[in-house]
Image 1 (cartoon, rainbow, N blue to C red):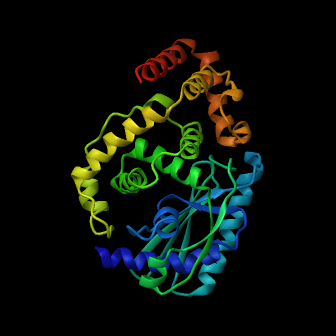
Image 2: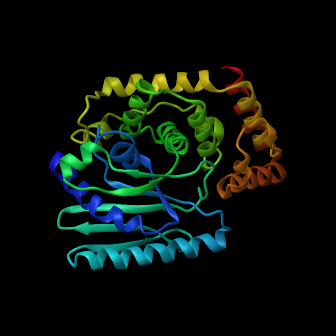
Amino acid sequence: MTEVYEDQVRLLLRVLPLVAEEASFALKGGTAINLFERDLPRLSVDIDLTYLPFEERDVALPNIEAALTRLKTRIEGMDGRIKVTPVPQKEGNNAKLHIQHVRAQIKIEVNTTLRGHVFPPRLMICSDGVQEQFETFVEMPVVSKAELYGGKLCAAFDRQHPRDLFDVYYLLNDEGLTREIMLGLIVAVLSGKRPINEVLFPTFQNQREAFENQFVGMSFAPFSYEDYEATRLRMVAAIKAALTERDKAFLLSFKRGKPDWDLIELPALRDMASVQWKLSNIIHLRDTNPEKHRALLTALSECLAAI
């Protein structure tokens, strides 16, 4: 399985310089963490992108689709054996590309909801381990460390996938949860579809099958299923310890549909399209189904009070 993953990484590293030509994108997710932020503790085979401009949805979506169309042309022009297939999204816009070369397949995906950024992105060079193992050099804009790991933590809470918990394991073992990363997590939580309490206070899932089928053979550093389960507990405990009283008050004010922006040290947060989208949904629910809104607000309040 490792050989298959390595072929995918080689394809990914060929494609990334072409992605970097689109100035509106920055890399995030597992590839940013393991091939740029850290020195290749595991392989990663997806190109997950943030669209950086603060644009209205009706402007951003066509611009994203146009950028991916340009990418498709450049990638196929690089090697005629590479096939690039756009994947239409529910709203009809293309925000995802499947890329196939012989037996290697990767994807490029742009998050059309979580647009913009609260901290400046960084121009990064792939790690020494990547350069040595794959004999290549790649430079790529990457989202801030706060947003990179904030998004990773949110994904780890939500999906509980072994790859995400592996990345969290090394975060907790090394620098830990800095205040900036906690702020990045709050951004991610307020940008997602699921209720805040369901993300921050998850019901644990059995992921042994995913561990065996979608993780084993991908890591160079040791990480057992027992490590996975222990990391999940550590992650929840660390987040609970790191949430301040101001954070809790802000999350509750947001859930009420009346966010007190002064409680959070992120001036750009209110300009995030994804945050405004979630807020509008909360306000709509509050106005059209106050009973359900009260139940969700109570659930969040009780979870936060128990910390």
